[in-house]
Picture 1 (cartoon, helix red, strand yellow):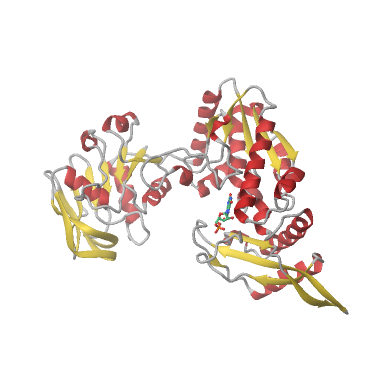
Picture 2: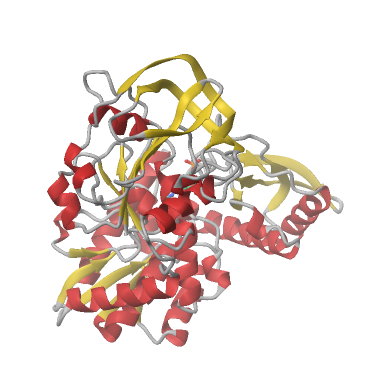
Length: 506
Ligand code: XMP
């Protein structure tokens, strides 16, 4: 495996993605680990990530210098490159000309790092500091007009450093450079695949759980479903799934997942109907954060009660993903997801955690799900907030209003799917604001509810743009909601991006 030492660079996760795209397993770890700890992890190669600091300032993050003597190939990127230069006796100073963006890169393609790459290519630069003198044993292997040391290498000791970012798309031959580092320099093989991962994870879980049992809270979402099916492969009926139906799910959602797990996968899943409990906890609550709290606390109470019904249970399965695990700074911590989780379980529940997806990115989770035979219908589902429809109903949540929203939302999903747009959107859903307006239907005057249509594109939910849905799709959604949901007489489209708005309305 490859270890990526994280110095807090904005592209650290992207480096991990690129290495995995080469079918090589990698992990992001804290830059503070000692050479002994790193050696114990038995890496075949080490990458030093970029980072926002300057190596010559007082609090600049460091790494253990002895890692360069482990005999393991190292590739330093940007900040990592400068740190390597400095730690090995070279010099780094503020560049005379800062470089941001695409630059013409001239490489020495007799060096293993640039083998097979044209002498002149382009690279993405983003730095204010430069390496100004090389450590012993190194030579320059690439340069740009403004950066004489765009890459350096100690070929004998397999130590390489690049000032540019091979992991971003704008570096034309970035993937070739990464491949050269992995395969030519480090002698790795492209053998990390989803089926080997699934196999290994199953073995590990089996060993860890031993004679005990495990429980899993199923939310209806992709992550908890994939995690549960994977753990079930490992320990079979010793996994008990609990689906808390809080009555705030989308139409048929609880039923679909229950049916899939019970009938297709023959898993032990129990659905507990708690709509009443949640509705009474939400009675009179209109503040968004209060709603979240009420739902979270109720979930914990219900789940705790249900979990106590199993006496041999020692483990709790969680669908935590890699982005939740990597803290933006440098310490790695397994944090139980609180806000963006089924409801957030308290740490004092006394379970050992099994997080089979903790090293995976979302799209990798979908691949695992595919490998396990979970149908696309569930794998490709749009993200859905833990507090569910409650935060899409402005004002008080009641059974009647939930019912209106659920039917309208179903039509939105149905029409978006019919138009072939579902997979290209991050989310598309209906919101029920607390607005009544006047209309005419037949000869009657109406005074009824408004539905807001929200559809956005996004790659991670952090920022989003409203989707330019075709007029005829908007038209169909509007007419069908009004025809089928008689409580509604007006449909409007939300044309705000995030920021300044959020995706959800509460
Ligand atoms: P916002 O509304 O903050 O949403 O732009 C960003 C993404 O997060 C989801 N979301 C939540 N997920 N619990 C969750 O599990 C929550 O309380 C929550 N609030 C928002 C939202 O659906 C979107 O994908």
